[in-house]
Length: 211
Image (cartoon, rainbow, N blue to C red; front, top):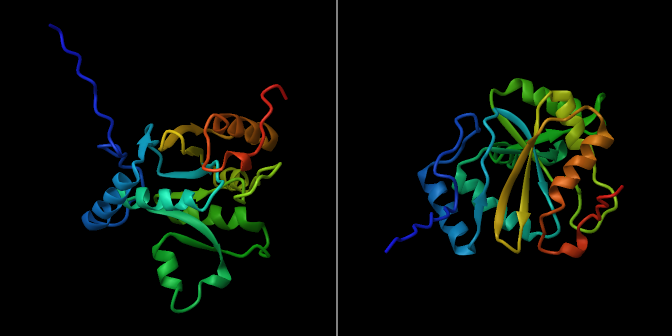
C-alpha cells in the first residue's frame, strides 16, 4: 500500500535571506514564535534577497493587524524601520524609538519625507521600511502614494506583504519594481493586494478590475 507524505507547513521560514536586516536574539525570537503559534498564524511565501526595500503592508483595517505583525517581527528577528514625526523623539524615548526601528521625519523640511527617508537608505547597508499605504484603518477611496515616492527617491523595490485573516496567513506576495509612473504603479500594487482579506473587509478599498 502506497502512502502519501504531506509536507508540514511551517509557521515561519526555516531559512531567511542574509540580505534581510536583523535584530533581537534567541530569546526575543523564541517569545515571538510562541505568540505566533498561540495565535495560529503562519507566513506564506518567500522574502526577497534584497538589502533595501520599501515594505507595503495591506489591507490595513484593524488594530489587530499590528497585534499579529509584531510577534512575527520578533520571531523572524527582522529589523523593520517605520516612520514617525520627529517631535516624538524626545528624552527618554528617543533612543528606544530608534532601537525599535523608528525614523524621525520632518514633513515641513525641503524636499519632503521622500528625500529624508531616501537619505536614511543611503546611510544604511541594510534597511527595510514598512508602511501601510491606506494610511487609515477605515475605508478610503484612495491610497497614499508616499511609499512609492520614497521608493522612487531611494531607487529601491517594494515588497508586498498582506494580512489574510480568513487563512490566518501573513502573505509575502511579490517584489514589485516601480516603473516611476504613480498611476500605473499604484493600480498594479492595489490589484495584487485585492485578493487578500483584512479583519474588517468592509473597510477595504474598492478595486475595479475593469477600470
